[in-house]
Image (cartoon, rainbow, N blue to C red; front, side):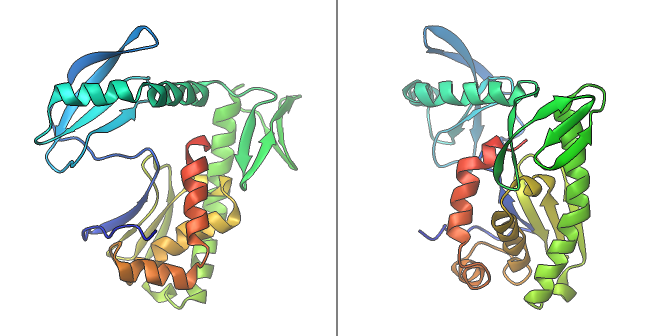
Length: 251
C-alpha cells in the first residue's frame, strides 16, 4: 500500500514509530482509567489537527490521549479502556527499555540480535570489544555507537548521493540523537540522520538515507516521491516493515 501524501514542510522527516501529533501548548488535563484492576493516569490533550483519538504511552508509563477538536473526553476514555491490552503491552515494553543492561542482555547491532558479555572491565559484543565506562553498560554502548555512526553514516550518505547524482545538492550531513525520527531533509539540502541507523540492517539503514536523499527532489510524501523511492530502493516496503516491527527495540 502506498503511504498517503503529506503536506509540504520546510523539513521532511522520516518519523519513528512512536511519534504522534504534537499537542497544542495547553496544560494537559489528568484523568485515569483502570487496567488490570489498577488506576492509570491519563493526560488529556486536544489537537486542532487531529482527526481521531490517539494514544501514547510515555517513558514514565503515563498515558497521553489526544482528543480531536470535535471529540469528547468521555468517548476518548472509553476508547482508551478498549485498548487496555495494548496499553499493558506498551508499558511492559517501556519498562524493558528502561531496564539496566548487564551481562546477558540482548541488543540489536547491524540488524542482528546479539548477547552482551561483560567481563574484565570490557563489553564484548560479537567481534567488538568496548571498554566499560563508569560501570554503565548502556551508556557506554550508546557513546560507542554514536561515535561509530559519526564515522560511518556521512560517508555512506555521500556515497549513495553520488550513485544517484544528487551529491551536489547535499549541503551538509549531520548525525544526531533524534527521538522522533530516523532522518530528515531540509529545503537547504541538510541531511540529518539518527545514530541508531548503525543498529539496523545495512539495507534498512540505506533505505532511510535514500528516503531522505529523495526529498532533495520531492520535498513531500507525494505519489511522485514514493515512485522515486521505488526507483532507487525497490525493497523499501520491506525496510519499512522492519522499522515498524523493530524500531522500538533500538537503544
